Image: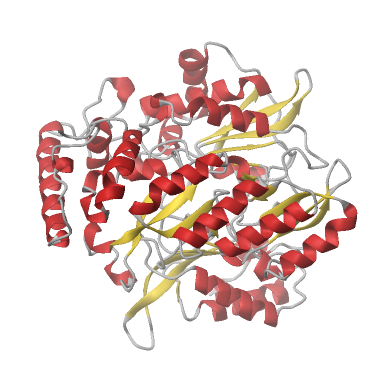
Amino acid sequence: MTPTGATAADAAAPNSATNAEAEERRRHREEARLIRTREASARKNSASRDGQWAAGDKTPLNPNEEMKSVGDPLEVRERIENLYSKWGFWSIPPGDLRGRFRWWGLYTQRRQGIDGGKTAILDAHQLDDEYFMLRIRSDGGQLSVAQAREIGKISEEFGRDTADVSDRQNIQLHWIRIEDVPEIFRRVEAVGLFCTEACGDVPRVILGSPVAGIAKDELIDPTPNINEITDKYIGDPQFTNLPRKFKTAITGTPVPDILHEVQDVAFCAVEHPEFGVGYDLWVGGGLSINPHLGIRLGVFVKPEQVSEVWAGVVGIFRDHGYRRLRTRARLKFLVKAWGGEKFLQVLQDDYLGYTLPEGPAPKVGKPGARGDHVGINEQRDGNYFVGVAPVAGRISGTKLQEIANITEAVGSDRIRLTPLQKILVLDIPEPSVNDVVNGLRALELDSNPREFHRNVIACTGIEYCKLAIVETKATAREVVKKLDDIFPTLDTPITVHVNGCPNSCARVQTADIGFKGQLVLDEESGEQVPGYQVHLGGRLGRGDDNDFGRKIRAHKVTQDGMPDYVERVTKNFLADRVGEETFADWAFRAEEELIK
């Protein structure tokens, strides 16, 4: 009997590991053949169609839509627990392995030793290792001591002590075996966390201000709104089949700290002259190969309306989003085609049934203002929080447990992760601040790091990611090690973002210096080597002055030459800047020879 939600090809699980790889390849080819056959029929005379459900076009027009049409992808959990965890990795059919597993935070990780030149050449089953990356949801970046400690234990026991803070405010583990997944799910859920929809074509982890409820300048605590959305809608079948992933961010601070301009939907705290404190609504932001800044709809959302408005925006994406081509299946393409006026009209008329009042825009931060919350900071209640910067988000399960111990020892139960791969310990009594600072420093987590240490972020990279072309974490660490020694007293922030492929998980277009991984020509050897396309001067949080980084035609940097490039450009900036000019402003006006 075919398990619920699986295709006929999915059911053909081998009973042993004998010739497992050959069987996997055969099954992969068969499933691909069946899907191509169905797609060929479905796509006949469909070149002008976009797969919009609202237009009555529900015929699956690509393999991902075909996979989702069979059944709710969340149903795969039953097979994980009752079949695959008992039968082993080679029992998992392709439709589940590379499709539905994502709905439970699981991606196959990259087989070790495969260089970046083969990323776009090898088939999926050749890139797959027999291990998984696991994302654990922590919406708003919120972790209790028990939760942080348990993730650390899971990492140590099941994930070779790996743990990375992602720029979606959650923890990623690696080296996870399918046999261990049910136990991991049990332990994660026992401490009030979950992996539901941590990946997949669903509402992903919600970004929230890491200083929610404690910031001195906070207008409103967004935590109740974040919790209401996750409680009501994560796992709800009405939103488990979106055209692609959907990213949300909510902040209650007057100067947004959740990169609202590059989210599918964002709610930014404002004070309305008539209705009091609520949120300004943004839609349609996103990066990757076709970056698009989100747009203000110019309306005010009351706190009690947030979850309903959120569901309306997600509903528009589900019903009107473009499903035919995965490269156009993000909300930003629909917003760009419709414009804000039409989007707002559809939201109000078809999904809300009421009109949202006009509202003010969020305040704009000063150029160079920091939103990473690193350092020792006083809370509104007189306690303190300490923010530290693990290099490019890399920590470990052991360190995560130690952070939990340090937090607990001073009577706190709140740890926060940030969208910039930082970690905060909250609710520290003033006499205990030095204890926390010294305890974290002993873990190589400094609350007063030098500038490059503080301002580097990096995606997973070729170490584990099947999409990556180049290394990221180690390269970022090399930049920090070299540049902080060269510029120990740098007096201005310079952000460096390192990404392993063109998808911009590390937000290269928004960095002062962003590196997008690709193969480049080494002028000395004449051969293609790992390297980066360079983006310079990305600017967010500046209202009408927001912009993506500047690119110079045909300008590339090799991976080995990247630290030297950052050194050269930094020296040119320091010599050529005018007054308190920021790096981003300088990068847009500088002559090309100064930024090459």
